[in-house]
Length: 106
Image (cartoon, rainbow, N blue to C red; front, side, top):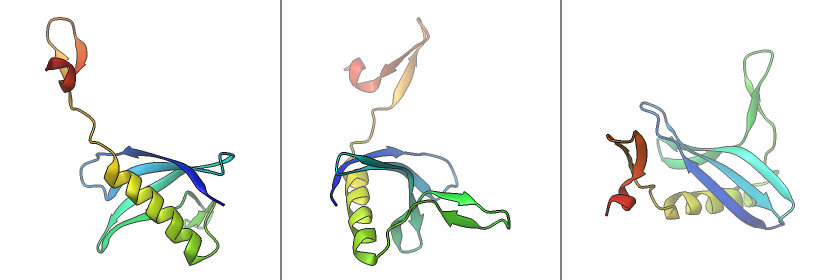
């Protein structure tokens, strides 16, 4: 099994430890969405997609079976997170009410 694609979408929410949401494509044929990148006390880690149970707890919907596969997911996702370029901030053009990327203004 190989991770053939990783897509990371950064999340900026004040006061939240969640930093991004990732999607992973395995062998160009199986996708796993909604993997969260969390800022923990000891650095970033990933949390697999989960669902709330009837008792109020959470249960993973998908998850690696062993530590080797978990590390493969975590390394690929965190590398993509760190290598992703920060998106250019957008501003509102006062005359036309159109958003303009800062790179377009240069």
